[in-house]
Image (cartoon, rainbow, N blue to C red; front, side, top):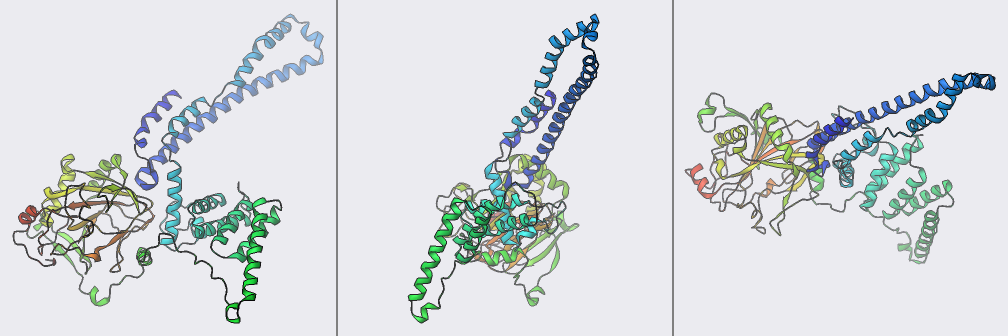
Length: 556
């Protein structure tokens, strides 16, 4: 048992450096192994308790037979000197030994193990973050609570379901955030499962208490009153419900008096309830963004579609690609989005993931006001940065992109590897700095960003698309491919149509990798297709593009 505990102590410390498990599926897999180890330890404890009880049982059975015989003729039994001696010995010594056995705590090893591992467990932030992720997935993919509760999600390999208690917990998380819309949905789901006879640790009174208040907060006074009365039928002495009942009745009576005394035109008017379902952080583009995540609202016409092609690309006669050219596919026309197929191998992907995983930390964004990096709720993922000198594979990938694009990797930022968590996403954003945030990349010591190159290092069962709300484009993850687009026009002005987002991952695990170019001053671009994810210095632009012009790029 001691050996087992030491092994656990060795396995877990690296997790301690990575709080925020819910933001990375890759790191959450470590928790699966942790829980498996705990179950093994628990089974060892159960076996130890069973062995202990077996010893006690055998002792009890032996003494039961002995005392049954002795009580039939006590004098005759103790008249035998051996029986007399053994009786003295049992009561003086053996019963004390049995007492020690009964009092022996077999849980010491398991509790020690659990104590060691608990410091590496997810915390309240992780649990709340995972709950909010479910709510986010529910909204983005138009899922009803019953579908989620029954685990009927597309592409699932391991179906799971939510108990009434789980639904209640989700409702409570929404309630804490003053999100009464989702509170109502999930409390109703919990109530529905309880009504169907599910055995649970929660009761209908608790559910109705939250549900009635959430409904009231959304302006549906009639339903709130009905739910409160239903609660009081189950618990007539419920103090808060009795108070709410009187208050609701008072409000309704007051509204009735106001309507009665109003003019005929006004008397027909009713109090308009608050609109349900609109999140507090609602964005004008949110509806387009969520539709595109679902594969809806794509604005590619047949006429434009005919102008998109697939081709082989040799990096402008680069010797490395003459005999084995790269596969290119036009994903979109404006902005021009290109996908490279089979551009990174499975073996290279695994090496990159192995290098990145120990370094993953909560992904950050640039604060336009301070120019500093900070975490944000609209970006749920973890990322790590890799340099070409660290590993030959990283260097080889960098050079491959350079050969295909002609851009000098020495002017690029490091490779950024991202792994998305539960409902992992990055809401609509620009990769380039706007005019009102000139110091956006000050911490990086770079200028603005020309273009974005994004590797997809995993297939995703459902969700996880890269979408462009301004133009109605959706690009779906496909392992081993990469997509590229310019963020700036040839003049150096930002292309606002490149505003994009990473949709929440509904089912699966999404790994992505970015390559970034930066510059102090942008003069122009060429008609050569680059494939990095941001900008290069003016000097490198000159070396990369011997003849600069001021045109948007076209495909060779």
